[in-house]
Length: 138
Image (cartoon, rainbow, N blue to C red; front, side, top):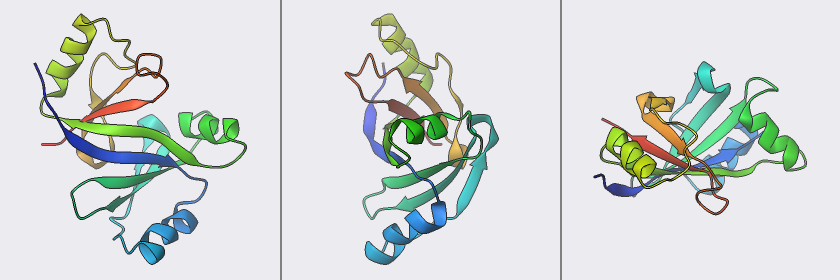
């Protein structure tokens, strides 16, 4: 058994962290927590926390073969919402429970994500077209 604790972040594909990030800092007044490259996922991320504890995560591809690069290509060269991340209390239990229920998963085991989080993705075909990420932060 597991619990969804809330929305952890919304992942937005971007073509340029600096340019897109300015909107979130200058127009919305959100702080920028800096950049992090996650080589395994072929992205550089920037997090912009909101007062309620969730975040906007900007994702820029570091390689043409990354899912973010493919997303932007499919989207006519523009960014957009790429995924929604739900924070869970126990990602191992969440994956086991979802697998037992027959939910199609991209990741059957957690992997390391930005900010040291444990993450795993649920296939969009299981969620009616939305790429959902499960996220556990310790």
